[in-house]
Image 1 (cartoon, one colour):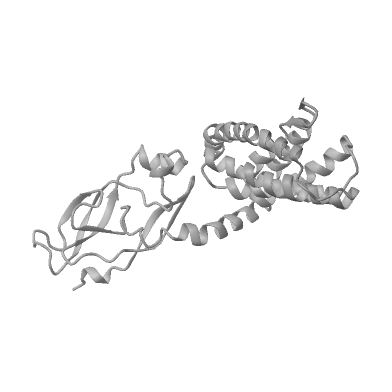
Image 2 (cartoon, one colour):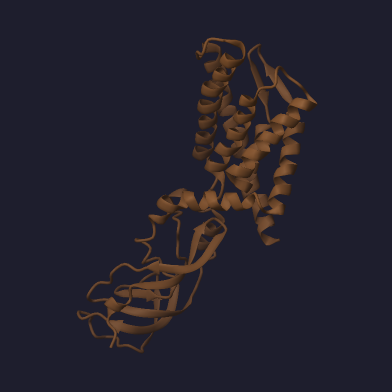
Length: 304
């Protein structure tokens, strides 16, 4: 006769990321001696919490990945702990609500058993995201979408607003941000390269230098790393824009100017002020657009 300790693993539906659901094996936490083990036959899915988590709309403090969704569970007792109260025996049909007292789900959709797989998000999540982003490069639809966004960025590059002698506000980076959000760092980076080269030939502005091409690749790559398969938040958007400012505007751009023209490799007060002013503006614009894409465009794309 099986005991509660014979049940080490199970297969469960797991929400890995927004709009990504897999049926896979998970490791169960060790049950207590007074527990009952129930094999799940049916489990209800919440139209509120679970669906918001699936869509990435749940509040960040209440949104955990990976998540095994489900609330009420109907199943059959298959084992009883040596210190259980004896009120149930194997074969009894039971209904459990949210991992009721003493119950543990086998093959079901309860949130217990996730304590051992929660670390997979931080340990393997980035690797999986980078692999998924690499697959986007081979998808015709993704390539076509990134190409359209690149063309849009070239058009948007013509719309800039001069604010004072040192500050120019542009919006072409928004298309790169959307590309990173939808298609990941690799394809967004390649789109950035196309944008820079095509934009230079359509509207030359200064000498051509491959260092600035690298800047555009890194811009798309940075956005992709921060946004691809992740929920859009104001804090994440600020961090993405801040990363771009620190790496590209304050480090690489002065280096390229030094190589090209022999300018001293220093961070001038004017450059610091310019980026300090642009950072909140770029953050606000990018956040507003990505939230619109996340809540309006992505659900439409998923239905197709």
